[in-house]
Image: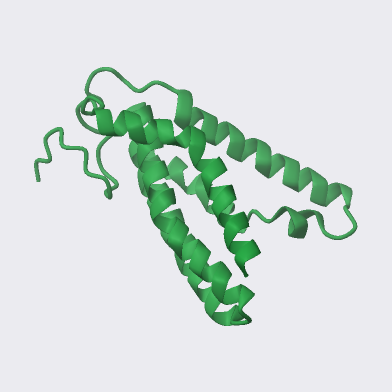
Amino acid sequence: MNLGKKPWVVMDKGRIGRLRYIAYTVAFGLACLPGILIADIFTAQGHETVGMILGLVTQAIVIILNIMLAIRRLHDFDASGWWALLVIPLAFFDPPRMVGPEPTPAGILSFIGLLLILSIYVLILLFRPGNFDANRFGPAPAPNTAWVMAGASLALIMPIVAYGLVIVVQRAL
């Protein structure tokens, strides 16, 4: 199948550059936000099981999409897509449970170690430039469009907006 230079969003083959990676991550985050908010509403209304199931489904979708994006981003700088499996611990990243009510040295060290590894991994995905020419994973990514640049710039304000929405929903309940 010849995909040419068309940047398919949901796929694990090919390459995407840094800005497109950021833009797609923002788009997927915004698309999953309603699922998170609905899960929170169900949980707050006393339907913990429904809220938990919706939360887990949303989390699974986010993990799968992040793995697919990470594979393509890793391919851009000629790295194996298997490194994308490093995002799986994000699903289980729960600092209160790792450290516990009474922090132990082992819990604190595991928290710091996981945080450090994931931080380095994300920084590499965000800032390492890709190969300018074709590599073993395909031709260079398509040039960024205005929509990609706009989506990537949303990454600066998305955390603030998401946090505000969560506070508004929680206060409304």
